[in-house]
Image (cartoon, rainbow, N blue to C red):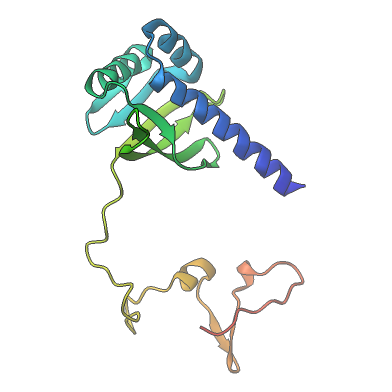
Length: 181
């Protein structure tokens, strides 16, 4: 049942995100302002590499600027929505009239209690590659070595020849043990 509730919440978040994308694609200024008025708070803030935009007037100005600089393109969602509490993140892309990708981006959104947007942090372009890739060599031993399993499960202690699961990471009565690294 919890899985069904999570799916319904995910669909609801994706529908809401889709409605916001419509405002970015709306060419009519009046209709765009109406859509924004329904989806953002009066004090909403949009921060991206081009500036700091606030409220319906600021968002409408930013979207008009987008239409001027990239005529004929449209914004489309390119991922599902990841959400917890009043925060969401999702990716998007701008496509040209032929459907070719022009730009990709990522939004991190804070919602108000009424689910309208309070703040959007908009990132343009793909995430950069790691400055020091280390995925092609074994992890270092000793101090400073990173272990994803250690981060996720916490420190472990040896019980005989096996590693014991920390007590805060067990389910009641499960007695489950993690396999040795």
